[in-house]
Amino acid sequence: MTVAPPAEAPTAPEAADTVLAPLLLPQDLRLTPEQFALVCEANPEAVLELAADGQLITITPTGGETGARNINLAYQLAHWARSHGSWQLFDSSTGFRLADGSVLSPDADVATEPQRLENALRLEGGDVLPGLVLELGEIWAS
Image 1: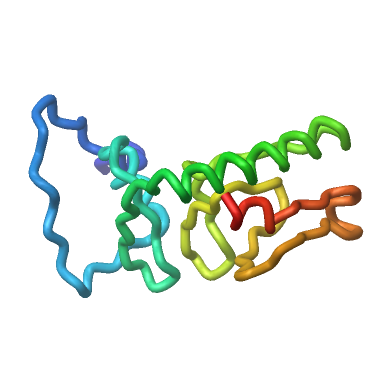
Image 2: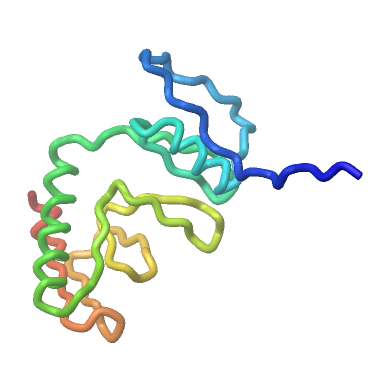
């Protein structure tokens, strides 16, 4: 009787030392969250997200206006977190695996459930994040 060694978890290939041209991926390519993690590990400079249907989403860097808004939002969150306990904050490079299987990166996040807001001028944390008030009007004005 031959016993096979235990299967090892897949690992990402070593990144090449040379600069590679952008990959052209088929439109119908779909990845599992585990496969997506391997792609990200093998391509640490790439900024990627994963849609709920498994499609790879490439993210372009933000421009100056969006970058200024993001840092303003992060500043307001950090100020609140320091004065209201030990909340863990995450920046826009952090990917979150959501219930639908997608892996997305918000502009900023407090360790709760991420949600998308559009055109809001003020956000209050309510019972979930007591004392949190984000003045979004300041952000849109910048």
